[in-house]
Image (cartoon, rainbow, N blue to C red; front, side, top):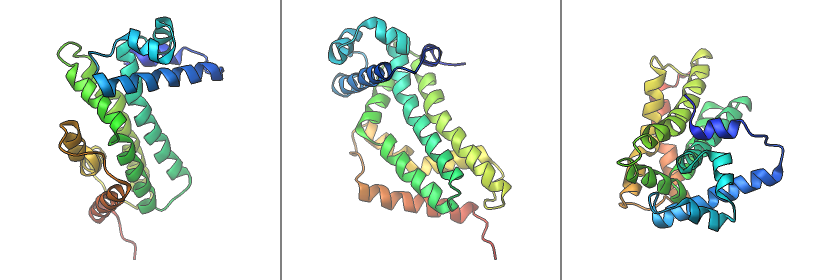
Length: 217
């Protein structure tokens, strides 16, 4: 089932650069307000004022405020999925490909913008319980599906030995950022530096490949 955001946006023409720019401006305004005030206290009126747009523009592009929140989440997952697909098409070495993916994923998921979206989602569950499943579906599951597809291709070429692709994708994501994301959501840690991302990504990729990579003699 597609989200309200997906239904609304997929039905629009993307030919107009002006429309695309307005959509991005609305998302940027919403993110800044979410970071400062949270989901419940971020009204459509405030988003409209900050983005210099009308409510009808938000309804047209995103459906409603929940659809806007879903769009912020989905953008990250789609960008990661497209990047992983690009690495595959470039025929990069598997270690290089998943290391590049790992560093990009950490940078996108553990930054202040995405953490604010996660906090907004959690804080709104009591009033808007459908937001949680939407976040998980358009975010985590979309990214996981891309990993499963990539791992499956590498199993087919006998570069990886994985019997449970879904579990392997869970394992990779878990090692990469779930504990760190939790720590940031509750304020125990700040977003990682480039050096921390490099160090942690390398450890995760090495651990994963030591477990699943087929070493050819």
